[in-house]
Amino acid sequence: MASPRVRKVADRIKVIVAEMLERRIKDPRLGFVTVTDVRVTGDTQQASVFYTVFGESDDLVGTAAALESAKGLIRSEVAKQLGMRHSPSIEFIHDALPESARAIDDLLSRARASDEVVAQARSGAEYAGEPDPYKKPRDAGAEDGAEDGADLDDDDE
Image (cartoon, rainbow, N blue to C red):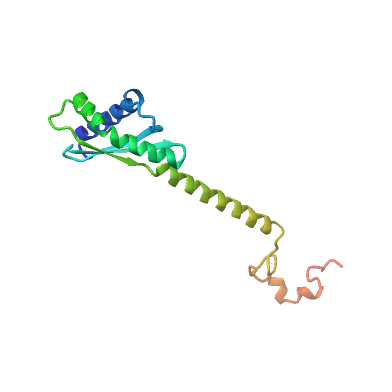
């Protein structure tokens, strides 16, 4: 869908299909459908309509059957409203994006919970070595025997 014309056709098909599903299709198998995206080939001969269904898996099966049976009516209305010489053939595809997003959210919540467990285990932990593991430069006075307790600066007494 590179050309602006194809994008406009796809957007218009999305609106037409959504209005048809809302107002004109009265199939009882049709669940709560949301048209998420429409992709049209460059020659505008085929349109893929992506949809999601709110509800259980049996709602999804019924909605898919209802959309297949209403495909001809929807295609004729798309052709009438677009006014093109050739109307695109329509294919309905269930959009798996909400399910994938839900699975990713579950994985993120599990990772967050395991991070909290690690943070709790880490709260009372101490370093295995010395508190300050870095080497310090030696003092100049340490080489002269200042560590023995003898003060070299006590010349007043």
